[in-house]
Image (tube, rainbow over all chains, first blue to last red; front, side, top):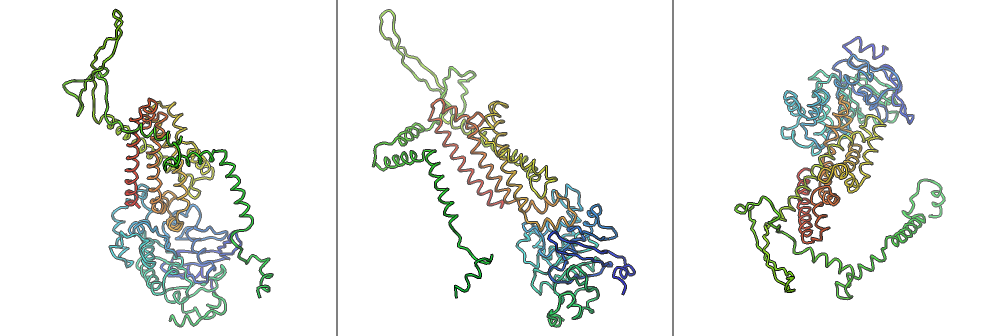
Length: 267
Length: 338
């Protein structure tokens, strides 16, 4: 079996590559224990694993919110380092589990802050965003399924699903090459979760953006992923298309005794 | 059954203790003892005796009390308050008799003075006519002018404190300071500014800048900057981290994160603190005026020292009304901004 890194390099251009990345937290938790993989352009890649398997740490290593102890990470052709991090961050967007929006600010401003690092300083400090950007923000708010009157509503007044739509609009504002989604639907009810993941997948496909999305529900992963990376205790224990995610694979990811009937229900 | 359970839980951490024990009782005793000692030092016994006496006197159950007498005499001399301004015309240069100020009039007052005639050795009455320029609302207007000056001092002191404390707060917020040493220096400066009472710094600033509003503005502004710097900084530290992380992940610099993710969160409490400081500055501006730092306090001190208690009464009424109106205004402003 060839390593996933080689497979990806053979195919399309690689957007993201991990080479033997390790991270141990000060309390001794091994969050990442030698992780290597590569994601080609346009793929919707799902990180699947139980809580504490290192999914968040892996995602946060990509945009430097966590600094790995060892190994190298290549993002959009740049090797991640403190020097290249500002550029990487401007081309990699992130959607968060708790939405991480400014709740007191209106929807429009929250979406526009997606460009906060890309406009001149005076515009950023005065929130005086250029008109094309404002128009784009409006178009995105409508694209993610919100109404025009939501633009001026405070984010805190919206429902969880609507807030995550705002989060997605913010992430897509600057046409990122890579979108990281850290448990984007973990705080949402099952129906809303499906809607949000469909939106994420379609919006990414329209812009040919690559997505690396962490989930803990296998049924959602099977339904939306092009490819699934199974993570357990900081190691990749499964790598393949959703069709290959069988009981044995689930047992490797979640340990034995995983109720596989949930999968059949979802299918 | 209870017996069986007890030994098992005694040594483990898994148990619930009652909220108080002998240590609490001891602490209450020690604190109570200290308060009694301290109460004697600050003459609380005399305070109780005098106040009780005053209350009894009010109810008619006791003879006149010392406190009641003092306060009563003082309050009586404040009223009626002085509204008009009366100045001797002979001492005023440049007064055009044909063209007096608005509402002003000239009053003649005849005074009879007795003088000893050296020849007859008798007292001879001499009638003198003095002319006064009387402005019916002159003194009230003068006090209102001084009150306006006081409000201006408070306003500029507040502007100064906001301008000083905003950058200080960023440097003194542990999560946004550029360096640990800068943080310590900023925290130190903020504490230092807060540690000097306005009245004390006004005393020295009057020496440096002379009598007038400059000393007042600086004294109030510096103290308030210490207050605001501390509270602004603590709010920055306590702001929700999640939106800040989101903007950081997008590549935003610290300043941009502050502007877009922190400022919207802290804005309501900043407005509240700043309005409180404005309110406090108006009250304190009258106090620092007592040591010559401009405004209505300076006028108050002057009249008090000349025993012109009716004028003092006017000043006190104007201060009271102004503070009351300002309180209403700031309450409305808060309700609209928050």
